Length: 220
Image (cartoon, rainbow, N blue to C red; front, side, top):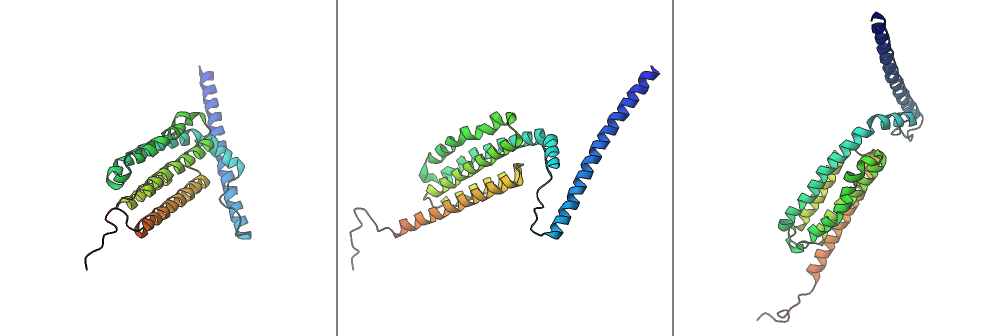
């Protein structure tokens, strides 16, 4: 019995030592990377300091991929709820397009379901790429809905697209490069849609009046 107890204690001590050694090696690896970044940056101010060593990247992927995948899918589900809930404001902000806004959103629903249905079977890196792409498509759809409307409150619909982008940037745990690419693409799409909407309104204002009463003159 005593021998067994000693064996268990010895085994537990070994496991603890192994765990401590692993943490120590990671800490030393991170410290060496910090020193390397500082040294390279002092020598060359254009040196890439936002790139970790392959070993750190590998360990980060192994330690956090399950948690990050679960968090990404959960926040994406809430994002879908926000995306579909924006259709309620169409009847107030863009009433002139009728059911077109809902139809545009419905076209993207199959694409929105891909990260949820297949996210657990994909690697985290590939899942992040899909989520970034889907976010770009969804936000572009919201900007398109705002652009095709000529209602007086239609410019406020661009705020909805902007809020969707803010939500994606603040809640989706994407890698830095994917987050930057998503933000740049969405901002570009929103700006282009807004300019197209302004040009369309200007053309409507400059168009000559038409109709059966357009040729009537006011009495002098």
